Length: 542
Image (cartoon, rainbow, N blue to C red; front, side):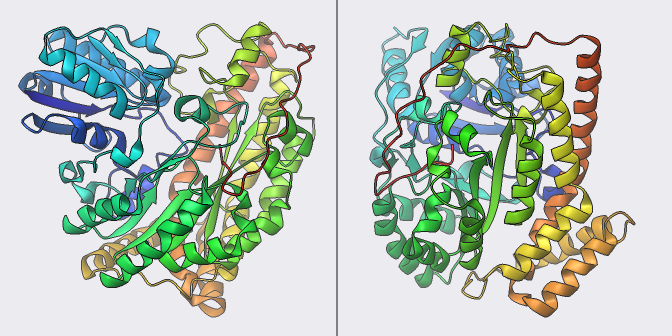
């Protein structure tokens, strides 16, 4: 059986698709499709498997001609691309299987495919394969059971050309113990974190190492510290493994802010080379955090927690959301002040979107506030920076958009962004960093440095800020300079992207001023969820 795995393109501009930064070092996209690599490992050994990632190679429908069966799928921003691949394959008479988060959440949108393999592939794909062998394959495969990830196979990393990506991805843990109302992670993967065994993870890293990969590895967990006890069991073995191989990797991941409560865990993560994490702050307003059921962010100082993480050599990227029912007219000021006080350079500020299957979406539906077609990818929109607010808001939509515009134009103004980079660069304790980069990566980085200087060190808009950061960090904290430079490199994407979002938002404001949307000024009262207990093992960034 000849199988073509197609990863649809993220076609629209997105906060996460920092292609211009990738191009500085000759890469084409941030990360490869870990989900499809895992699916490939679940297929029969005698199948001939080929991967096409439309984000790093030009898609040609003629690629379908050599396949008997086509597997595709993805997330909401890939919806348009996934449907296009499906239709092209069907037109050529190919058997098409579709799966992934968006088809699982909105299967009715993907009924053109021959088979929908929904949920976690470790559970449903074997059911399809067994039925297909017997000639009785069904249209839809969906199981409520969650996968035993200790039996999940090592992804087919051998299908990748590593040079096309900025970093590679692995997954250690799925699920999140919290109950954030707007988040679909707990709906898709459950609230009980499920982790692979230490031996499993080391085997995956050994596979990458054996294939010659060196450098940045992103753990794409829903919350890396969802079970802190298991993390502390895993990290000592990882440290020994890295020491034995000369420190070939360094790591990033996603975690909840109460990581700052655990000095031991922070120290262990620093020792094995974690250099950045993503944290969902969402809102600086405590009432809004309580209303969205994210109480874990109300039990500690956000600013002090971020500073403590910096003290352990770990940079922080953060997420904020505008559009919650409970937020007030001061939300923009609060977010901008929180960004300034924490010094976090990279902040994903977006508009609230009702995602299929979430608690919030079910509530909005009951209140009659969901827009028709809310589950569709907004035409030409890449993510919630330009495609959110797919429901009737409590505050006037035009006020939310104006606040959002203020936030975007303020936090990504060059003088503000580079000031935060300098703040982090002077604070970051990178003295324990041990990664050893091969000469080929150092040569790649050097080439990227010259390109970065051309993009930021010469243009009038950024050159003063760029060289000030370089000079101050060289004098004040030279060990942090490589990471400081990486943060500045991200501005090659975030600068133009912020301007794009600002233009789109201004257009939305203009349309709203001419044709105001219906606003739900009196939503039905609702009971807030019972305050969740904080288990010793827990939290979530979702």
